[in-house]
View 1 (spheres, rainbow, N blue to C red):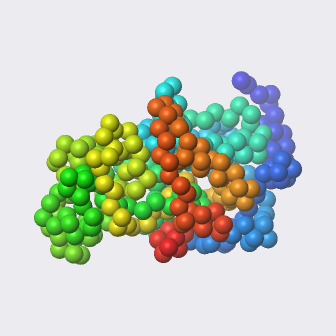
View 2 (cartoon, rainbow, N blue to C red):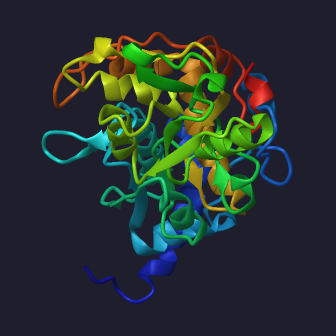
Length: 336
């Protein structure tokens, strides 16, 4: 569709005027963060309302590009149920995808682009971070842990879930603690914090176990299923989703010992605090309104497509605290 000469400038001027004011008029959030983007700062509803300032489109290179191209790019995971996966029609769905769709709805309204095109790109553990860092993705909507190391090359939203890394094993040979792995073989997934942590524990404790690396969570799980590994180290919620999809879930055992705390967040472009403010504002509005509880129940405590699996997973205390007092901290200690 072509535009008349000069109409682009007029439209831009109208969008600047509508920008944050239009967002506020619609009852949508425009929130401010501490100076510098605030990747490690606590964000409470009280301080957010006190420091709220409009998000100007021109202040964000990401929003400016989305406005000028009419396209926003979202990364999703094809098989990370219930966060981000493909349903029976091969459409990306899930908890993280729904949160990103809420963000996209606000962007569509603020930019006055009802026909905003949403380009969806499948990512995995190895590609998700580079695709955010190099500017390919505007939103990475999967199962990514926010760490201080990762925050050097990209930004992260307010925390959207809190998981813990644990060991999955067969009940016939239960691995209750990491010490039980001494001299044995454990599996984990490439590009994950669980893999990094297992390497560290192996060296620090001198356990001498061998680590097999799967290209994705399904491959890592198969290493356990086929007996090539005695355990699989990964985030507990993902372990639950994997065993819920097999014929014999009762044959598997998730250890009580938590190896690490994993704060999940939406991946964002680096050095764009105005864009982060908008994303955080959407998430925090869901927390303040209590709507997050209905979203959580839809994906963690109800039958979900395409097989109507129900994880029956109550909300954890750590995430309840995040909802009550939102934070985007990468420090695991902030969630204990």
